[in-house]
Length: 312
Image (cartoon, rainbow, N blue to C red; front, side, top):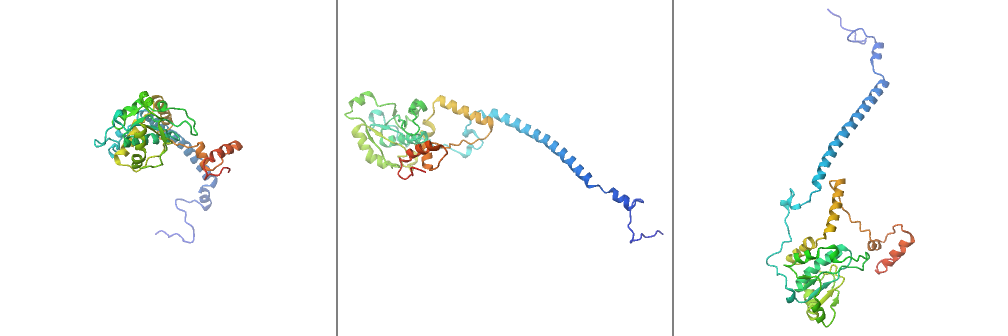
């Protein structure tokens, strides 16, 4: 029979290795550190290669998408088009445009503000002309605001398209006919309507003057019509803003060129209007580091509003 090992003595299995030999078999900290360093370096190198490979695949997919991104986007043909529907369609119940020779007179509009404000003014002008049964003269753009832009309506928008597209809703002419002008006893009457005026105001206050003078000009025409209108008039607003007001070909071409360049840089992008303009700077009440010249210029702008401090 074999003898049980003595529990008081350490037992080393698998041979006759001594405690000294066992201690030598334990890896040293230097060895472990070196091994970890080598493994980390190899991992970093191979990870870099994998990252480059992944980036190459991403870049190839991105480049293939560039070809598709140059194509015109039509929201109605997207995968989610069934969730949307057009809301500017003209109802057959809406009254048709009144012919020029049967209208209540010629409505002239002088817009105000930046291009966005003027666009809103033009949209509302068409609706007001419909309310008054008037013939609308192509609106006059603002040449006297901070921007001092001397562009005419025909320089920015396609005038013929504007007139043609709205022909079922409102009669639009480029100017008052010469024979009508010489037959009028006085020049067109000018007036400024209150902001956010209801349709009833135009019928009660503006229509009698228009019919009496045959031509009437509404000045500073920005936000002069109430937001809450009949559904069919809201649709007319949409038809003007999104369909009738079409930019001229050179502007469309330049816009598409900018969009193509943005898509080359990224498949997705955000366009931001910083609104860094004199009137915004005046209202902000901030100083932008332009020295005494800037302070003087902003002070002059602030003088136009009693509620703004002239000096910062």
